[in-house]
Image (cartoon, rainbow, N blue to C red; front, side):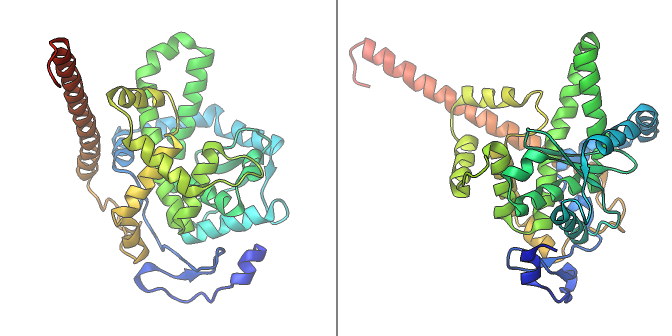
Length: 352
């Protein structure tokens, strides 16, 4: 383990309904979430969209066959040829952090991790039958080791939720349709936008998974801040970024709200400031604390939550978001009415 891990130690005692306790860096012990189901962290809209796709007869099987003919093997070989595979001898601290995340999330098959020489600070989980994680080398220069662990946990969340199949195929479709076959890409744009909306919701889901694995909200939010604009050797202030997040979410007028929607169309990830706000909302809802006390769905309880409940929750989420926009429209109309009335009165020489 890391030097920090060895200093903290751990006795492996039992933590009641919440699962076992494991040693952890950061000066505290972390709870193992035995047999935790992805339903515990998945955003309702994310889950409903995936369930809808999975209910199409033979859909998953067809995708796997298509991708298996030319995709997974080629991608895996490319990373084996042009990236460094993490192991006890190569980036041993990443190897140890990956093992710890998988232990916390009760994932027996530890995915391979590769470090790729790339200037963009990012990471991803790709593949199908054997998903693996890719960390861009620039991330290791900007993020702390704890923050890198949060990113690893985020990607493990994608693997456990079964996102990787659809995420990988979406990326391939985007590349083929938009760059190699642009005319076909135009026809596919509505489908791509719909898939991208699901993709963004899946990111919100796995930010929650990262928190469940790291069990320190500041580390997870700090990793999102670094992904937004961190640089090597620069110290950033998390509280300042949280304030920026609140300012973005609640500030502005109607036109700003329209721009916020337009800005994310075609994007694979929500803005980091919104991801921080969404994560804080989830914590404030009490869901995180319930899971930490052992109150969470288990994988052994298959189909524990009916599909219709997922759809209902997703619809409520979109309804609430729409209601916020309508409220902003009403407020904007009231402001315009007031300005018009004041201008009319001034034109008539009346007091406003």
